[in-house]
Image (cartoon, rainbow, N blue to C red; front, side):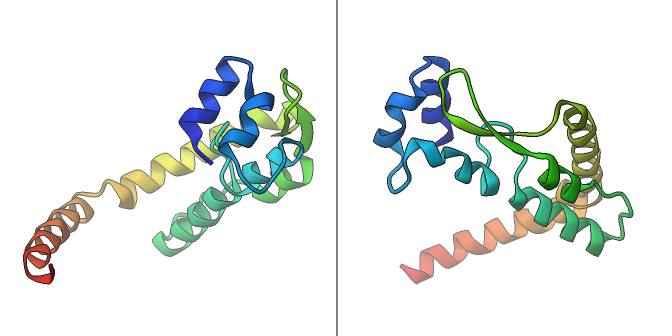
Length: 136
């Protein structure tokens, strides 16, 4: 979903009216379905669960978060504009946020921002620039 546009509508308390102008194919009553895969409100979604878990496994990081607890406890509730949204139980919000953020920090240190990874990214950019001159 177009996050910035949705955030503007939410801030202006016009999300329910403006939904169909931005999102095609699903009525506003099904808005929460988008949050399962790509949560524009909180950033907590199954896509992150997947790559955090996979990356931690392959990097040998033993720290995990209980994504299944989140999925069991999450409910669909209406926000202040009457738009259905995913909401974890209050008792789980802090635990989930802290454990996900801690794992994210560990992954950034171990891989995403590691000096060797950054160096390889720079080399790949150089290679793509050279290729671009010859492919066109």
